[in-house]
Image (cartoon, rainbow over all chains, first blue to last red; front, top):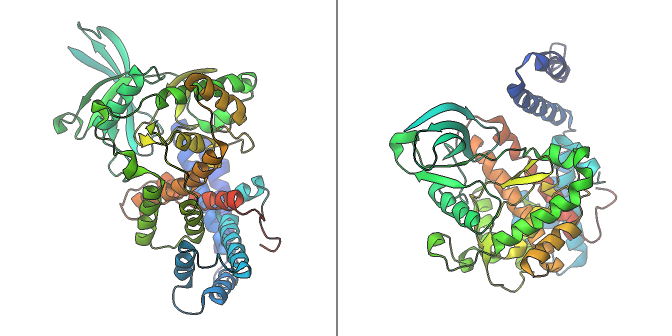
Length: 121
Length: 323
């Protein structure tokens, strides 16, 4: 049980104060830094909102492809390095689908506009 | 006799410190008021960046070759002066802000002309060929070609705490599609929107020579055109400012050589991998090097944008519907 307002609600309020009130009081040369602060807060906000199920689901897909065990993501990366999936089309296609999902999931948090600008997601 | 009349840190330059310097010279070749830039190494850096004395030599070679570059004047490695290596060049005037350059509607009618000029500038840089005794510190092309670059990226990822499957997939494609070697030329290696200066519609400077080295001329073309450097206009494939046609035309007119689109594609994929690795290295300067800098800390996140571009360039089937 946590006190209210929640962390995400406080973050949203802080972001509003920063961009709509404090930013205007800053000297011109420090405003780019304030924009970077706002960007960090937005990323933290999005990351806090991500479903706890999303990442384990991708990891399960990787384990289906590379076998269960520790550090599935690194084993997947190493397999891609040596072209381990290239000779069997269904596995190659499955590997590519995972790459898209990993990338889209990360960009939804750090830069959803970039996804939209590229017509993806 | 020299008197410093103004000194202020200039914005930009993630890897080096640039200081605007106004000086009053009494007598000699520089007699009178001079507007200069002092360029010194930052506290932390990344592996691919050269020293300031080397950058001074490269910039001098480019200046002599007729490239639009601020004239480099003096260089020093005496630690008693500013504590590290530095050089001084003339200060060009204009803007470098890439978001502004790619979105400013006032530039609209002149965009093809500016882009063609950039193609010509790049061709002038590529007219500098080895061997050059003044550039003897540059690694031979056989040591910095695509296979060596891929090996370097992999070695970096092996040390990095987070695996990057998309980069591994992209590098596998690169290693199996390396084009035949060509006669090397001087490549700028960071020739892009954000590293040239415009005063109105006039090009006034090509900047940031710290990554220059011998390479395939298509390497610079792929870097200039890759999506990471299009800023506000992803649809304008030549640096976010125009189509490729005027850029390629300017290059061909100046150099007399045609551009091979297949080689450009290879180098464009490599550009996305290279920028992803550089972004992670920049973030390391904050995460590992202890440099307290929000911009550096956030730059690491851009690696995933490069990964999306690698997927878009190489996956002919495109994004799966259920992704």
